[in-house]
Amino acid sequence: MVKIGNIELPEFPLLLAPMEDVSDPPFRAVCKAKGADLMYTEFISSEGLIRHAIKSKQKLDIFDYERPIGIQIFGGDEEAMTIATQIVDATQPDLVDINFGCPVKKVVCKGAGAGVLKNVPLMERLTKAVVNSTSLPVTVKTRLGWDDNTKNIEDVAERLQDVGIKALSIHGRTRTQMYKGEADWTLIAKVKNNPRIHIPIFGNGDIDSPQKALEYKNRYGVDGVMIGRAAIGYPWIFNEIKHYIKTGELLAPPNIADRVDVVKKHLDFSVKWKNDVVGIFEMRPHYSQYFKGIANFKEYRMKLVMAPTQQDVHEALDEVLEVFGENAVRFCKPHYLLLAFVMRKIPTIRSLRKAIAEGTTDLK
Ligand SMILES: Cc1cc2nc3c(=O)[nH]c(=O)nc-3n(C[C@H](O)[C@H](O)[C@H](O)COP(=O)(O)O)c2cc1C
Image (cartoon, rainbow, N blue to C red; front, top):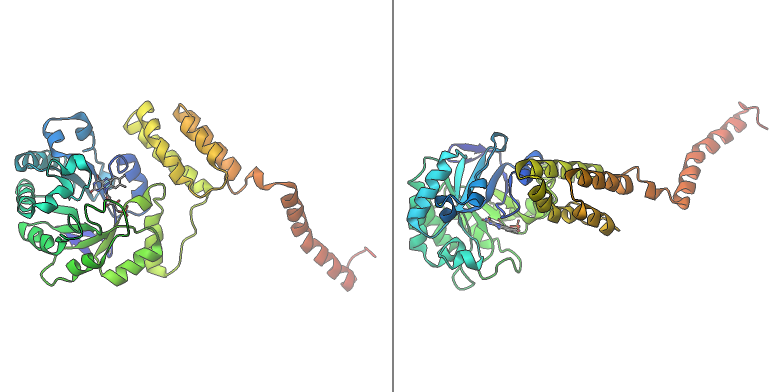
């Protein structure tokens, strides 16, 4: 069992990464249903929270069935982070997470996100401000360092632990790498194997299959993995990884009916939580992800993204099921029909021959 403060997680927990414009309640609901053990909100600006910006406030929405859930905040000002933490604390998540990893210029320029990796004393002060403003466990998500020459995560991990964080998630890239290249987990493993470190260390970056999750678990010894992009359009990845780790066997991938079912749930929640217009609009990028790899899908993706109402999207999804599902009409091309006919006749012909040989039929 892995513990973050008093939060008990299963052995080798799978975390859903915080992702702006993705990790909202509807997306989290489908990930939770498919096995995510710990989830985070999208990052929320501390400045936005203290100014009561509607967009920031809406991101605070969490639901009981999501527990354990963390709310992630970012900012470069201690006072703003203190007040923001109190606002977050009042919404009663299970933990507060600080983002020290966002590489985006507009965040970094304000000395927040990964920008703080260049100023470790500020990072410590911001973390202290958050830890002192809540009784909830505080966790941090960060990167290896600012650039190739300043990979300071080993030092950062010790210092943040000393300030009082209860877990650390490390994305195996530097800020200057953004999302390029391959995530390097060797430094994550060094942090995990540091005898001074006693908090859980979660690895993050490029986990996109059950095999890779198990391989990285064994190779790098982390306490759990955090999954981001691979869960977009494929929340099944959580249960697939769990099953593979437990049995060594791969689960069958979701069929079209499974996909349609999850997309409908995601859409319905999206419309309910936002409204018709925003909910439908924000679902549009998800369709190509949910149906990735399906040949000749373009026409149907267009139908899905052009559908103006919830009902229209449902109808387009029903059509997807009809055309691409197990009982799809498209498979009934003449040669498939002929093949099916012959396959069904083979046992009949065989039993007929047998009956003739045994003399148990009238046919001569
Ligand atoms: C669309 C998108 C939005 C993201 N938003 C956040 C965020 O709000 N907070 C954060 O800490 N990381 C954010 N990230 C980074 C992810 O949490 C994660 O560290 C990164 O995608 C690497 O993990 P992956 O290879 O499993 O995707 C975002 C990533 C993506 C792709």
